[in-house]
Image 1 (cartoon, rainbow, N blue to C red):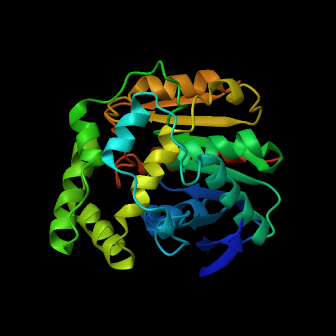
Image 2: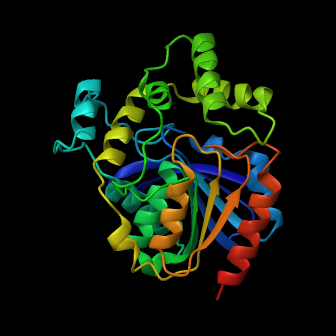
Length: 298
């Protein structure tokens, strides 16, 4: 069954939900930038449960039903521009803090070691957990993510623009805006499931409309620096999944991640963009995760 609740971890409240039997292979799912845990679709989680996992999804700080950092204020576009030009700005919190939150959640659940799977910014947090708390990691799965290597090519200004444009606050306009963003990030190889995307976006809006957190997440991502040197010491089984048509973190970001982590397996998916195509690419990704966690389980 599904158990949803809150725990205090690393000094904040974290909303989380578990699926399946706690004696199965624990798998922590970390969502993408500004995304609530429901972005890991329930059917996707239950498919992983069927394959022998105990699945944990959660709202990280500043999103969904977890603790918000309201008092920190919203960084301006000007501030973000300065960071991108290399100016040193102190973020409200860092990806290190966010990785410590996730480990705090594992502590609260009494889980000593887990398979850690993150997508996009969640992949960066997953990498950071492996860097800071390697003894807690059975294996690492980094999907559509990147290393922070400054030598990697940037996305087009159009994609960056879509990403930093504040969404409208009105519900219907918000859903339309986000559909545009998700469409622009999708790859040509899979049918874009507009109905599912609309449904999950509406659910997210109704559960918690909070665009401020996303801006602070952006600053946390941009100020984290290059993880490549630290990833060299991540000696746990690692699976890197990346869409060949990813317009946000180009495919080289996936290749760079796999190269940075000793012995990592790289799975490139033809025609996939910066998403988990609902229906389309799910089966092969779920199967790859299953094979990977089975192999990596002591």
